[in-house]
Length: 456
Image 1: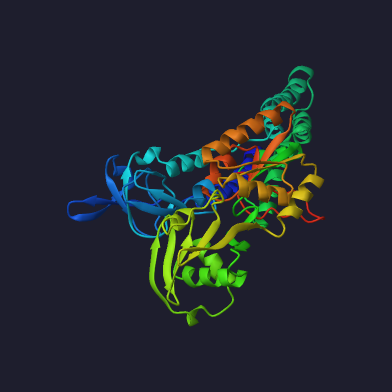
Image 2 (image 1 turned 60 degrees about the vertical axis):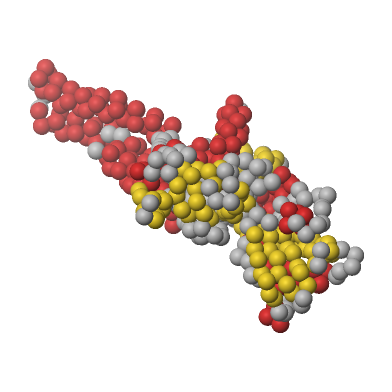
């Protein structure tokens, strides 16, 4: 009975963590806007069959996997891939559920039923990742199941045998049997183990750390590899200007001014970072003929000059061919058909990320790995800045799981464990797969603190 009471408290603490974790990944839409003869009709996701066309308005999440039926689209895939730069798609390109449509309303041809969609698979992996008991708890439970009946049986024998066969006083030996039963009962042992984990889980929850299973507390002492997501975990998750490179005929101020004047009319995250970097009054410049083309850039007339701000494809349309267009976070500027320069935009590391990684290594972490959906060049740069031992980029959620599985196999051979730190739905499968994990961006260690983490 005491053991069951102890387990009841522990299960209550774990259930609370599970509910809190599940609420973090409830990103699926409830209905899809299906095109019908009469217009658009909201339909439950489970009832939308492949082959139907759905409409996704600006700011909405794509509810089902499919192919883009519109000419172009720009979507935010950071919730799925962790990639900080929005993706530009063309007609017939694959578009995954969970992505956010940034601009104009688009049409998507559904290719998979809801149960096979990306978001449904991720939610299923998280919700079915069961918690486990620790080896200590398993041993104590097995021990109690054998020990307790033996003790009770011995007490019964002690109470009955002397009076029955040796003519001893019944009351005396019943009293001695009860004393023996109280002294030998393992209630203190069997209740202390689950209650100690309950206390640990409860203390962690007060610090905002949710623990899904007590076994994740016990494995921390074997942790020697920590894997990180990049965007929003090690980095701030939004853009800032990294470098301004004007052409010989222009100055840095000229380039930034023209870019900001035009980009103020765009809602693209990269455009907003350029506007934020300009500290002057943009309203003093007359701007006309503003035209934005998703996947290319934006054009406008400023002081009777035609200004184009965008990627290499946008400049190619005005007759400028660029040799190096590999850096996806570089914005190019052309004025009246003349190349004016480029502005590199990047997602900066958090101020305390480098310190946190350094302190992890001081706590005995031998290997740090960064996994991201972002491109190799950006990932390598961030990894070098923070002192990450290994960087793997351009990964989808399924790819991250494979990498972590490989790391887990290597670690388990040496009787060690792998931890994962990440945020967003794209990290959910890895959070569920890792030995121990933290689905938050706040992994902060002070010189006085111990490593605190939780598992999805």
